Image (cartoon, rainbow, N blue to C red; front, side):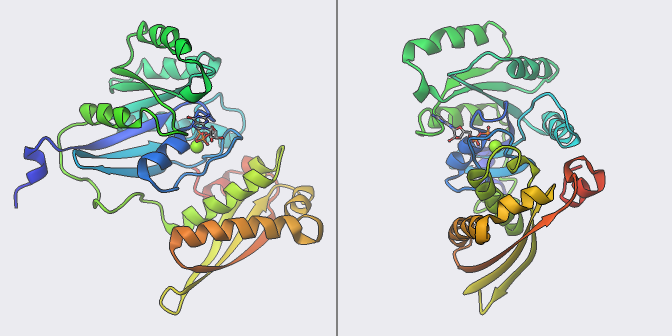
Length: 302
Ligand code: GDP
Ligand code: MG
């Protein structure tokens, strides 16, 4: 059969979402997809792996890569994140660079701009969080960035309020090549359920703990069993930290913290999977895993 979409100007391709930590990449991705697949927090560097999200639109299929925030690498884990982000330029049809309206100029953005000068791919600049600034504030920012002559378009949005997002989708469709769906149109991510579950648990640790703990945490789903035709799903997961003292904090007094992490995660996992979930959480010390290449590989960082 012929590909009817192609004749109607149907578009498809990959767009990478880049920007410094905390600009709202994951918020935007979840909003675009109408489902929570990327974890969000007010602490930077939440997203560690590359996340693929598929936006199915009547005029095309946009496949987004939510990359870890680009920033100057310090630990081995951070170096691995920067490498992932830069490598995605090569695989995509276009780049969506996010900055914040309330903090439009900084060293990290300059660093990203430098990397963008070396790509042939079309780049759309997205100014997010416009809900945080008065209208008059935007114009000089847009002018400043348009003078760089690096962008196809400059689009102000609020990922939180959903403002400007339709315009953004329309602009991204313009830069994609003509083509049929690359993924089945009912698919919104290529991530396995296990990974999404681990990420939801990690998000709760992010929300409920502070200082170094969120960054020292990794979550591994050890067991994922569906019982009785999906009516109950039994999940066992390990929360991995770097030191004994961190383990104590994650477990909390009389196990209170761990129970709260488990309760909040279970609610979201149940809504993600559409089934009752029995969630068992363990906490394990894996000494200095962020600096250990073998531990990083086991967790899927390359
Ligand atoms: P990422 O690190 O780039 O993925 O950023 P996140 O999506 O995790 O968002 C970081 C923080 O910014 C979260 O607290 C979000 O709720 C917040 N945020 C994201 N978009 C907006 C926006 O348009 N307006 C406001 N006010 N906050 C936003
Ligand atoms: Mg993120």
